[in-house]
Image (cartoon, rainbow over all chains, first blue to last red; front, side, top):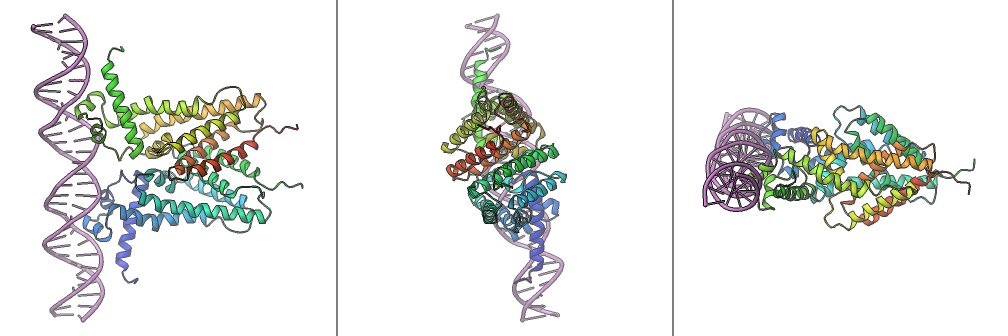
Length: 204
Length: 204
DNA sequence: TTTTTTACCGACCACTTGGTCGGAAAAAAA
DNA sequence: TTTTTTTCCGACCAAGTGGTCGGTAAAAAA
């Protein structure tokens, strides 16, 4: 069941290069030939492993994109500390990584959600699944933050999660055009401001 | 200089239909033939009026997209009232329009910025020009809000503008996937929350 | 060793892409 | 009316597009 190593290896190579180009040029602006050329592989190899361009992309979403988002935005948000500080740190790190990445083309998830919105519901659904996990994760950490006394009890966790995701997706889109450092700084500052309005009002 | 009415009319028809399809399917996923077919016009007509697909799109940006963004997000933000209320109203209206639009494919400006990010700098620049006007407009109304006593003097207007634009672009992207009503509600609620943390701390 | 399966090649297919061009209606100018 | 200019037609082009398919090395099984 795992003896098909060659198979897995080739598929993985294709997926990695595929994602690279799809992310860089967009799905519709990247041909299978482009990917094959940069891998020195042939059409036959591609259609031996994947049924179609769409099938190929779905496999990329489920294998690579999912992991990227998890490791960058979902897994770092855990622990019993102050959720505001945790999210802050997570976003700051993510933005900093993007800022220092010479090859940044925006937030991968948001880019593809935007590109496939209403144009390919199959792919859209897979992408939205990742989004939902992220959202649920944010909500749960905020809820825990309430019982831990960090988050004001009147706060609407789902609303906050939506707002956080929205704003993050937005800055990431803007950051591609340059001026990242400034954008990140301004964004983080306002994020902290926003958070401060959600924290428990201490009388200390 | 304005006697070329026929010319202007045909060009306008092409631009309107072009924008429709570009917005719906994306630039790279829409061919000139698609547009021509839905207009019952020929290639000759197209290349008589426009030099290339790119030139065509630029003209759409400068003639149609600019106006859409202005009328929806820039012009409504004027007046000497409380900037928070004005922006709130403007965003609420914009989101409501989107929500009730059966043919909504997201925020037009953000969609194209995302699609052309780093892939076509010429078009990107024209799009970013619109973004900048929007930003400047938000900043100036916030600054005025300070002297009018609505906005706390310590607030970083540019930071707020960035945060506002980011979050707006983000929700609009999310709204395409449905659940718009809920998203809009949650977003607006958090926006108000955020604003409340920026308002002058009255002791009344 | 022989046989079978896996993995890959690359010519080929029908179709679409952005773009060109000679010409012809239609409209305006003479 | 004739001439000129404007507007548009549609056949055509080279270069792709996603996808198929008969074939073939290499690896695994017999």
